[in-house]
Amino acid sequence: AEVRGVSSVQGVGVPPGTVRLLYNENPLGPSPLALKAASEVLSGCNRYPMATVFALLERICALHGLGLASPAGTADLGALFEAFEASPVLLGAGSSEILQAVALAWGLDGGEFVEASPGYGAVGAAAQEMLGARVRRVAVPLTPEYRHDTQAMAKAVTPKTRVVVVTNPNNPTGTALNLAEITRLADRLDPKMLLVVDEAYIDFTEAPGVMSALGLAASRSNVLVTRTFSKIHGLAGLRLGYAVASAPVRERLRPYLLGMLGINTAVVAAAAASLADADYLIRSRQVALAARGQLLARLPEFGLKPVPSDAPFVWAKVKGDCGPLVQKLARADVQIAGGQRWQLPGYVRISTGLPAEMDMLFATLAAKV
Ligand code: PLP
Image (cartoon, rainbow, N blue to C red; front, side, top):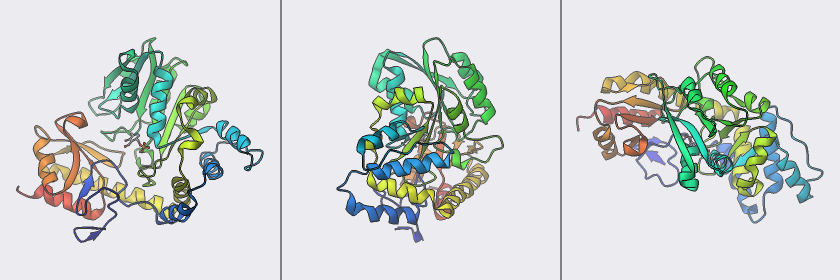
């Protein structure tokens, strides 16, 4: 497809000419190798994909240096399910499925969910939607630098707290915690409480000390780290995410996850091909980092105050309400996040796009009307 003369991948449901900097998607499109692999397996989609799902699980475990016992034989479905269930990695239809399962598994008997605000809030929102007044969301304001206030979060914990969520880097602010800060927060929590570290955007970080908490998830009984194929791999529309946690945490979650039957043939092929496409992954990151650098450098020209970001998007303070700015851009088919649905009226969140999309954004910001 074309974005005003510039080649781009628009994707499903995005009208031609639209510059969508709205949902923190990967503007490159998927890896061509992922696309090819997914297309090639589609004709076999009359079959359930259990054996290939297991092979992908093996790759993900190997990627993180996690051991996974082989099934007695892939032809024996019982053995395959057993090996799948013993895996240190849980799979989900996007990390969303896993975050929602956390809400149920830890919230069914009531309790409190501690999250940062503004933050992604998926666990608390799901808990409230499914369990209503039985649960309480505790929103802990970010620091003045728009970072998680881990001290305040630790202080907000009560005996009723079930889950504490850290989104690293945070959405919508793009700020990241370093591993030492997350470790200290984990140290302060009662082992009965779960610390969720949502690492949807961890592949885009640059700040020193910012690292994945996967090691914590592998070594502690009460830390769950989630990852997704939606962002750096550009597979948001195919739905695949995963989580690493201790055996007791995984057992508590399993009843609320579809497991092997929730994962589809196309995404298995695409994810495996994407993991092997190092060039694509480097490019994916480069595109985001280049656009982020431009946003941070140039938004002040237009009266916006961007917050230093480690994510594939930038959060910026506007003068007054963000409504007129969001609408001005929308009239030119440049979509950004801002307004009621996006938490704070005086801010916008702009996802990173291709160079031509960034040009369109800046040209529209510069336009008089
Ligand atoms: N976590 C964060 C912080 C996100 O921003 C998103 C999506 O934008 C998700 C999780 C969910 O991603 P998915 O379900 O596609 O893995």
